[in-house]
Amino acid sequence: MDEIRILLVEDSPADARLIEELLSEGKRERVRLEWARRLDEARRKATSGGVDLVLLDLSLPDSRGIGTYELMREANSHLPVIVLTGLDDEELALRAVRQGAQDYLVKDQVNAGLLERAIRYAIERQQIQRELHNLNADLEQRVAERTQQLSVAYEQLAQANGELRELDRLKSAFIAVTSHELRTPLMVINGTLSVIRAKLGDSRPDLMRMLEASVRASKKLERIIVGTHKINQKGEYRERFLRKPAHMADLVQQVVNEVMPFVELRQQRLSVGVARDLPLVKVDPDKIRDVLVNLLMNAIKFTPNGGALEVCARMSRPDQMEICVSDNGVGITEEDKPNIFDEFFSTFRVQHHSSGEYEFEKRGIGLGLALVKNFVHMHGGDISVESAPGKGSAFYFTLPVQAESEPFLAQEEAS
Ligand SMILES: Nc1ncnc2c1ncn2[C@@H]1O[C@H](COP(=O)(O)OP(=O)(O)OP(=O)(O)O)[C@@H](O)[C@H]1O
Ligand SMILES: [Mg+2]
Image (cartoon, rainbow, N blue to C red; front, side, top):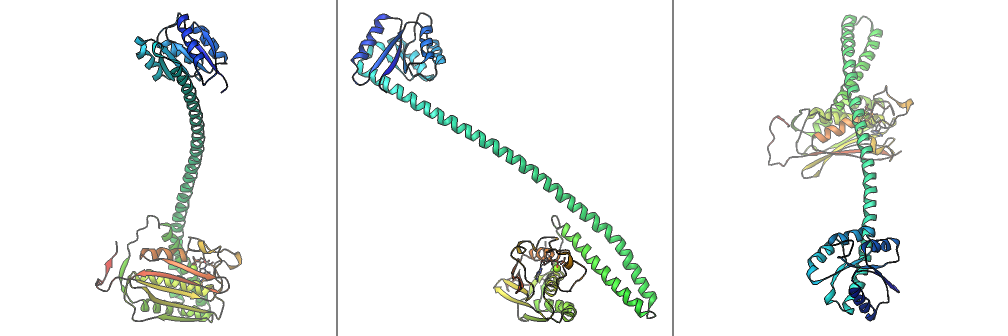
């Protein structure tokens, strides 16, 4: 700053002269002094600009006490103010400092050096305070903007969440009603078919063949409806399941027997690699059979005629058995992989959809793997898949095996 423009507000000409002299003695700063005897005049000058600092006596003809400082500040709150005071007025000067005055000087004790230093520091402090104030205001503004953006985003998220929950509720309600409504007529159809079968006896083999086809179709429909219903209840579904010690080799053999007719129809080869000396696993056998049937039926469906399938089981860790169902079929794309365990996910292509249970690439409604995953998780296990399009797929699932020291109870209900 080349020249400091000082406004001296002082009604006593003697005091004003004293200050003027002290300022002219100062060595380091060049100053230009303006003098106002009354507060109203000082306020006018402070408002119109051209002033860097105010030296303010609090006792003026038109104002006295702390109010003098307050009115001065009101005229221009950016101007640094140094209060000039008498010995008996220090307390008042301190109040002004607490309210924002940069400093105070006792007139009888002031000298040129003290005055000069007080002026320099007051200006610098005021500048720093102003910069801080601006920074603070800027920060507050940015925080306010960000808060506003966040609250908008939060509202949008809450709304989307609500809509999703509602959609999910509608979906569940729809499935619950549909599966219930479908089951009743299905029971009637099944009942009627068995009555017809009984009445027909051996008299009409041609009609009997047609009847068997209807029974198979109706059984399949029933399986789909039951599966849909089960998966729909999954959220709050805490089906109690019966765990009992089982030999994996036996479970696999039962399932292999069940799916063998389809393997033969498709001229495929199914090899089994399950050691008989594996430890017992404590499982719900129905559910593990369901898991194996679903994985094997998928392997059959998604492998061309003449392909090779395999089911194996081994201990992958001392406390964990790993079962693998693999095929050298069509494989699964990277894009589909993350979704195949989702309910109702079926890499949908109309010409391949539905009707067949074992024919090549006949997709179902996409519940099989969702149920498989659910059942494996119920047992505390996990499932994963390795697959390459054109090469085949391998599904691995694990089951925890209890330490040998823990005896199995004959039959125990899991919580
Ligand atoms: N072994 C496999 N090889 C290739 N693709 C598979 C295999 N297993 C599953 N998939 C793919 O994952 C999808 C989902 O399988 P999932 O068993 O859930 O349904 P789905 O067999 O089509 O119908 P559902 O089992 O309900 O009758 C299948 O439609 C298929 O695209
Ligand atoms: Mg399936």
